[in-house]
Image (cartoon, rainbow, N blue to C red; front, side):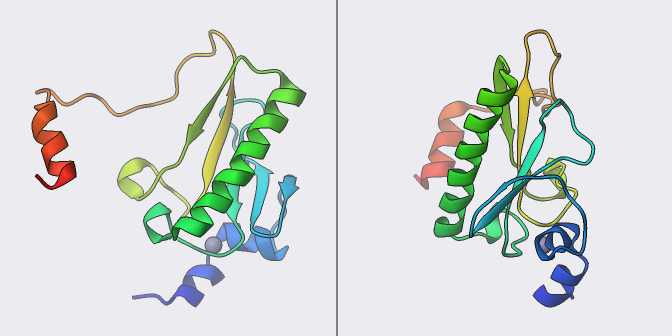
Length: 141
Ligand SMILES: [Zn+2]
């Protein structure tokens, strides 16, 4: 069982925050950093991360989540102004089951252009769940 310090020592995104690893930084503020994805899904694919090491959204308090979204919103505006995409996909993976590969919270901003194809999404379950049962489960009814 690793400590948070071990996690940070082995974290490629913490290495970017501390300057021990190179990244193409798009913008930065006191709480967050935005940099180009090393293996982009599209031109301008940017990641936004908190400077503080947190593993994922479940490991994040509301205040830091709000700061992350403020920076994400600013980067979205920047991408629109500079690259003129037709759309934008936001994606945040929490946990390996979702496709999270780096265990440091990050949001993907992927500029989209008409006809550029799709980004992967889970296959729908073979049997559709009862939406009322799902709602009741979420509400605790
Ligand atoms: Zn980290």
